[in-house]
Length: 338
Image 1 (cartoon, rainbow, N blue to C red):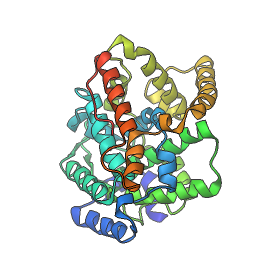
Image 2 (image 1 turned 90 degrees about the horizontal axis):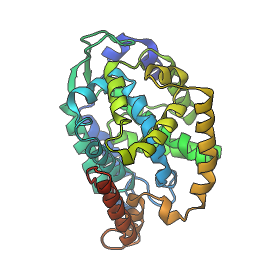
Image 3 (image 1 turned 180 degrees about the vertical axis):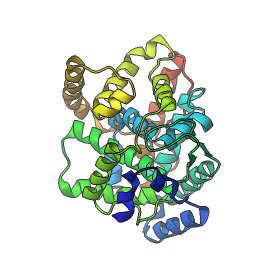
Image 4 (image 1 turned 30 degrees about the vertical axis):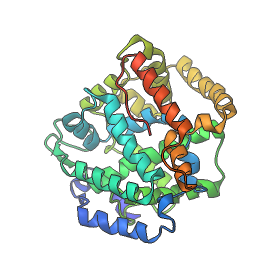
């Protein structure tokens, strides 16, 4: 816990962060390979807490929250601002991100390892300097995407947001299931090169880490983060206005008051009531849907593969086609969603 505790202490600990190199990544992946009994199941497989939670498409509602929490770390905000195509190709970046994430979670072992190596190689090229004084960081501070503590923060935002929105819809998971989900997420973290001494040991430790980070000046919203957030919630067409406004409400409502203010979200009692009222209505409606309509296509493809089926799941492929057609009708690019 000592290594984790220094993370929120200020800029000096940030500057001292080690980078994940390829040798370290390969060592962690070898550790995971040795623990895999059925390569076709990948790292997790049917029955795992990771598959049970991450299969639910409702978790996409937490995508805005996870993205903004990541941008609130100046390393991430400046890396995205200086190296990413988020502004010119937002759905393309979304596609690439989730193609890799779903390969790690739902793919077979070879697919998970390939995606881990691909992400690491991309991150190796992303280095630069922070161009403003923000929070714990002064202008000119160096950053790198393979900084181990920045990777830990990005990983943590995904896990924390997934649990938050899953439980908003399905109710609080039993303690043993919550712990199982967190322990499983460590396998996912190792595919980014995050070593065990850096990872909080238990779910309680993880929750304490999140509180420390959110209370620290390491997590501070600078100008690039505000600009990117504004862009992400600006609809490129009139048809996308209502869903993006709803996503913005869900995102703002799930942030801490400090980050909500730093990102420039207007908030009021009426918006607070709309946020909680939307969640109260959404839960029963979503839970009433057949499982086949709720789960992400990657999960359906994985079940078919594990059962010995050849090729993608036909129903899930049809869902993907309908989503692409819908995006095309509102003037957006057609991402791959499998």
